[in-house]
Length: 262
Image (cartoon, rainbow, N blue to C red):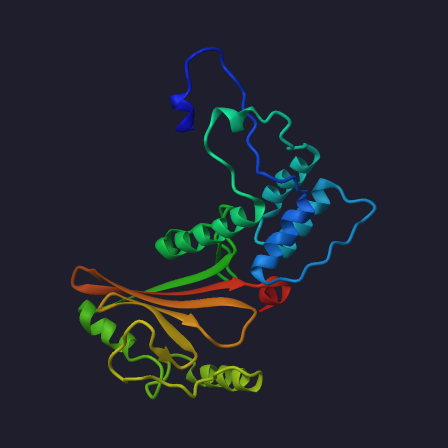
């Protein structure tokens, strides 16, 4: 749109914009699966209406059925560029499918890291009671507690989590998860911590790794245990008058059907 400002005035024109190659929807799904490390097989079916397709999408993907229905209905419309005039009028060259998907995934990760989980809402408009809120492909569960303490005091307990201190709730469940992780070839809880009181980015905390650390305010851990997907655990402390608000957020990015089941 910015490049169009430099075009000479005159009659209105319609430009068709498309990538350098022609691909079908199956090619797009295969390339996305390849970059995500997923194995997918295309199974043709004799009859499948947009409504049934949308229900299936809602079951096996993060897309809600009513959104999926619109996507499926759009499959009937060909989107092949027949007029290459845009390549002559503009110096911009569209990216290919592989690069476009790679960039989209990088941008998704960047947006994910910069967004407050408490601001994420389900596209259905309702807050589900199970498994947290979907944000893009991720499932998010966020909970808060208010404590009568300064942010420094409240964060001190968070800073010491894991290792010999253990986990403040369901510690035996964490130990059980660590044992299961060892059985399937993971690191388990045997790594502990480098220091029982202090943390820095890159430190190991049991089967987590410190991804972000802002003293007295933020701790984000990335999971390194065996699981079908990616997971993060984040703690954020904010002042609230004479008290402090602690927000704990669990984030899970499932990989395939096993990830959704997990």
